[in-house]
Length: 300
Image (cartoon, rainbow, N blue to C red):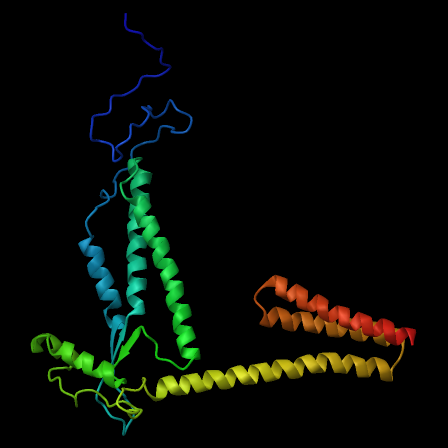
């Protein structure tokens, strides 16, 4: 005799193939389960999540990033060469991919919200988005490292570099002239673009010219000035209270000067340091130095 089990609520029949997952899901009637309360159906539902690339999203991304990925710049100052400088920013491609994955994940979340089913592939989309975010951090760190070492940015292709200019000239020549006309690039020759600012060293093309070289020199100079200022300020913060408490060897002078200098040091540390732990540790270390000096001076 077939066995039957009692049910506290009626279980609807789910047709095969209506669920996006291959595993069997529990049959739950909305409104009778405490986790899935009954709600009125929305007036309009978003389109189902598409596994293929969204054409409209792709068009929007291309329209948004086209001038950033491929930039055409002409000097506007009088007496400057008006031939164009071309720049291809490869790092923006990863930002474009990350934005595309964001849109896909949002679309999948909306599908979960309004269809109350789990769309296929959301785990893969999330994993791809995490990897794209990690790669974006790597690109920024690696680029900064190259700039600090005086090397070229490997993610920037520019006609200010002789090798890059030859590559761009060859590839642009494969584009029909009618399509290049809107950018003012009807004729593609070695004289089309502005010449590299720096001369070629040896037989190899040198880097991007005065902008990159001047940027590196400026960064090194600013870093040196910053280190120098910090060393001078640190010396003043140590020497000034020492002179003050030695020349005016009183309890009130020691207490007031220590309080003022420690408070000022804490403000400067909070302004320059981003981590609260570093602010607290440096302030505590400075206060400990002054306290030791005050105790030694008072005992003497």
